[in-house]
Amino acid sequence: MVKVNPFEDTLGRLKALAKYCKEEGVRFRPEDLDVLSSPKRTLIVNFPVKFKDGSVRIINGYRVQYNDARGPTKGGLRFHPQVDIDEVKALALWMALKTAVVDIPYGGAKGGITINPKETSAEDLEKVSREFIRQIHDFVGPDKDIPAPDVYTNPQVMAWMLDEFEKIKGVKAPGMITGKPLELGGSLGRDIATSLGGAYVLKEVADVYDIGMGASVAIQGFGNAGMNFAKIVSKWGYKVVAVSDSKGGVYDADGFDVAALVAAKEKTGSVVGIGKGRKVSNEELLLLDVDVLVPAALENQVTKENASKVRAKVVLELANGPVTHDADQVLHKNDVVVVPDILANAGGVTVSYFEWVQNLQGYYWSEEEVFARLEKKMVSAFREIHELVKRLDIDHRTAAYIIAINRIIDAEKKRGNLNQKESM
Image (cartoon, rainbow, N blue to C red; front, side, top):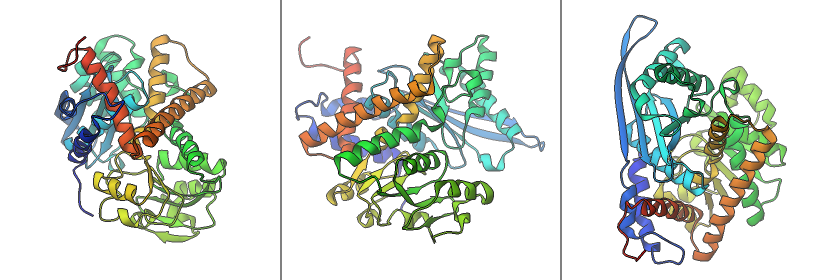
């Protein structure tokens, strides 16, 4: 598969929006898009860590704070051996758009540390986590930039980072990071927020496009997001017919017992261990004849090379950037509804926002209250996007981008950061 630079691909999406600038309700000009062509701040740190085997390794870390016109920057921090600066810049830009599209008062950021957590002990991961915060502590905080879990990071990593930050600053500041353990100020419901937010959106999509509750679903990526999504939608009556992880996938047109898939994953390390259905590769799963395809793994999975072979009616992007710009155009031409990542997986950052609000207030909500607020946010965002889809006869990603950029540019203009031809 051809490697696509995710940052350049996203900039291409932004440039393509210029043709809509004269449409009613579009409040930005082509030249305004320049403000989103590069990040406000990019931090690259390289630091030594002595591992428990006695070796000293140089660790590469990144934090990109893309745009803060609407509030402190917000975004996850991933551990992955292939993390690079272009990936982190793209993820940070998507976060700026994501927080705007669900209308929460944040900008966008993202971070990454180039390390393989599967080959690193918990003791060494703690050392790396704490040292990373020592390197960037002046640039993060509850009113500056708020990290969160992402690929291969979890509440324990957030707890180490919070503890290190508070030791350096000499204050208690639970709002400097989200996705924390409940004991340290985490929010109820945060563990399944990304999946549940996507499920709420799918329910709206199914209603609009007349997709029945027995609809078939294929999920690429059976990690935290994909697994919890499968649990939720199967309880609602959807039929999970295919799932995959890094070791491969399985397909059964009659559907799987999700609990059995989870058990197989926990026992054997892969869903393939369920011993039911036929084996499929991650690439083959994308092309199955299903109602709903859910890419929940990594970016650049559906490209111009395979987009024409996608047979799903709906593609719900639970991962970040799984469909490239070129593929988007092919899917739209083939009447495939793509629910973009900046909406579909925004449940995570929305509940992270709720966690931050609770931290600042020192008052915590019930799980039911968290979920009710999440559903309201996700449903409202989808309906606003879909209304624009119908009015301008465009795809959902374009509509989501227009709404998000409207809000970011409005904030930049109010701050006086953009030239305005119109009189005040």
